[in-house]
Image (cartoon, rainbow over all chains, first blue to last red; front, side):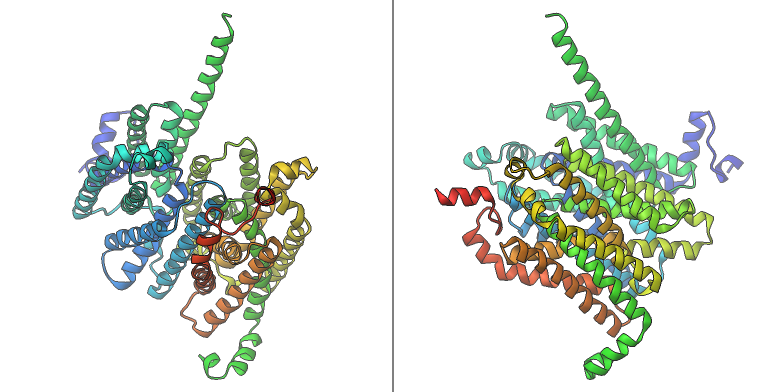
Length: 299
Length: 304
């Protein structure tokens, strides 16, 4: 142990900084967990943004908070609580008929909002019944990268792999059903079943991500990388890959920055994600203007 | 528990506490304006925007504390600014879920930053409590002067909603026809979002930033399920909000273990659930597409 290791400090020597970063076991675990979470969130989030289910995704994410709070109150593992609550909420939301655009949407979103608020209210109840665990409460809501155990990384890895495999299996029909639901139905694609399956995958993903970013900031990894990537490319394959890359960069940079500063990891992850999104939007606006000028110019 | 044995004595006991009277005063006014504006929020499919505002409310309040200004200045300032931003984005028809989501996730990240700045500046416990009470509300901790200010602001908001109710309904149901009839649709849109912002700030003080959606979207959603008539729905929504508030506060008083934010929203959710069950088969039979709302274009189609 050198002096540099005991007091985190950033120098211009990148390799020294990195070796300092990885000299602690909890940071290695944090990066492993962050990598798993970023890949899964990017893959599922890409479909979520395409399907315009951000509100459902956000609800499944915040619902993991009462799950964890309830689990802690009952004295069982918080991880179990995260998954149980998010999957239960996914089932409830899936039961509500999804009626496309128009007024049906407003009623659907009222149901989702009610589910979300009731779950959060239960979270408040659990917190007050348990009484006084203020420190971990902030962690539940805004995330912490400290104290991620080996077994937690293992669970994240197994569930993450399961979600990715399931997503790979349904990816083609799900994409078809998302892009053109009417034709997909006519071709015999089971769109209803697909949307239920997707909500369940979204629930699992939200539960995974919230263990790193906290229940309130899951959205940063679910929505920002895909939103940025879909600004940059209209090709599904390309924007999917860019999403994963953005997700990984945002998570790694966020964890690194949080390690070297006193501020919470959630702030850095959301900020880097937002920078990526704004930069991608600006890039798109500039290239659009350039294209239109080129099209007008030579004529 | 006295309430169960002897309701009348229990109620008079309850009302003899000043904190209970303040909570009822502020709570009633806040629930009223939330229910009224909530009807329009659900009607205009802006539930996600209200959800976003709940996070902005947290960041605004904590930001104000971190920089040492009045909590409510930050709360209202952030809510109204963000609401106007949403209105601007919406006008360019670009404010889809993704934009709103990206922006509010970042604003919430800022909130986390402010919380940590604030807690490092103050001694730990008190700061943590303030953060938590902004998130989850503390209506029993409201002071008399706060309660008075809150209810005046809420009542002014409610008056404003009622005053623009008719044109706003017209503009929400059928913007194109309303525009053609000379209704200032765009101006009403801005006004609507400002009112939503004010309501978000109000509701944060009653049930907390995380739960304000329950005071706004749940009564509006239930009222829309129960009646297709716009004005009946508007008042029903307000009534559901106020009744949830009253029952919720009474329950929280009767059992001090239950936090008021939970009881208020549990009652609202229960009402929504009943409305859902009552109308579940009806809405499928009569309104396959639109969940109980008849728009002007439907009416015209009906006449043919």
